[in-house]
Length: 321
Image 1 (cartoon, rainbow, N blue to C red):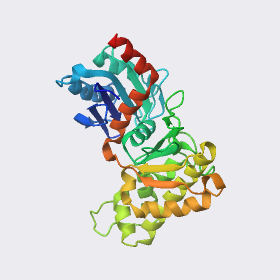
Image 2: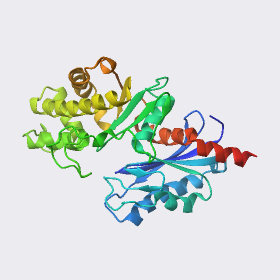
Image 3: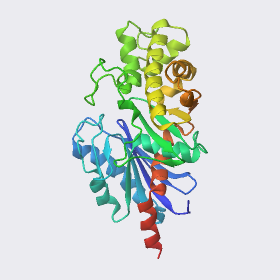
Image 4: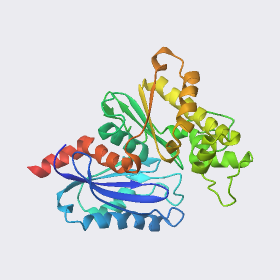
């Protein structure tokens, strides 16, 4: 890491965040705006460029050597395009080209948001010092990224580790991605709430919280339907984690995102379910840990992925000659 800065951008279904990040992972300047995910493709891009423009106007911008973007996916890092499941207007959308109009000649590194979070947690968070880890975000969607042999492995297109769209029920509900029984379709916050409401759960107050957070509070108080909703989510996560661990021999699983804020309401049944699904000797003792970077994980990770990209280092080296 150096004393230069990376401009990091984190694009999700509800917000776009941006930051100037130094070589230790500190956010020196942070901005945020709404994604406007249900609007036109051009309006969503404008939401992103508005955030990037605010970064370019900061007094430290002259120190920026690269731009790291972590976006809801799928992404295609080779072509600089994105097709987020939760941003309907963006299908093979030329995101890198659109951002480059604001950032100029700086190199841009694009990865999926799950890969970004993995890079961040491995750099300064719960996976620091771990050689083989799956880092996940469980929120309105479910994403993930892989650390293998001590390095982020985003894959050719930047989507490796996208655990949310592993099918754990081949006869299950149709997922917006086009598959059936995906982890995300069962385990995300949206689907925890959907399942609980369909099963008859209602908050104690007429105008109470009907999101996954409200279900978590009810589960903590012992509500049987709410507990069942979180147990169902945990089992889907465990099945996906066990499948991933079997393929790539991860040792640590880091779970972040809004749903992880439920604490033991989620982690308790998740650890129990892993005992059922992860039974082979080389996956039997998976460590499960909560993420440490909170809502800034995507920004720290977009910067970390940028620092670790060989092409970015090459360009930075040439610029310094």
